[in-house]
Image 1: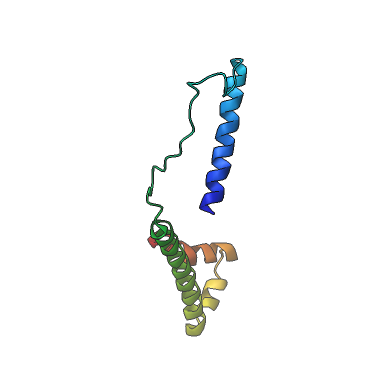
Image 2 (image 1 turned 90 degrees about the horizontal axis):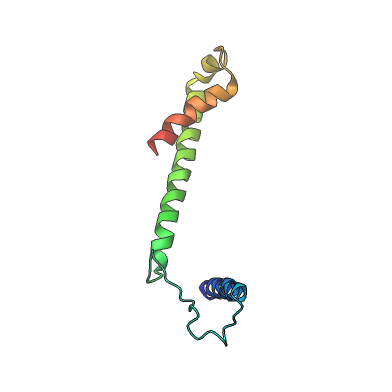
Length: 108
């Protein structure tokens, strides 16, 4: 995948370079001092996969945990029999769910 990304980037850069030279009426052969295309990775220059994977996995775990905690809160209300009291209150169902989801989303 990395080789494909490099190839696509180099191809686009070469196209831009040739277009800039064409505007000046030159080509790569006629202009010896033409700019060269070199890639430079600013973040994670060693291309270590852990640097890419670990933050993504942390995000997935936090998202899963927020979903699981919200579901367990609703189930707990149902088991205790207090969800019926919440349902008869003058709030809309989506407001009830937002009230259950929001605390866990804010904590995460």
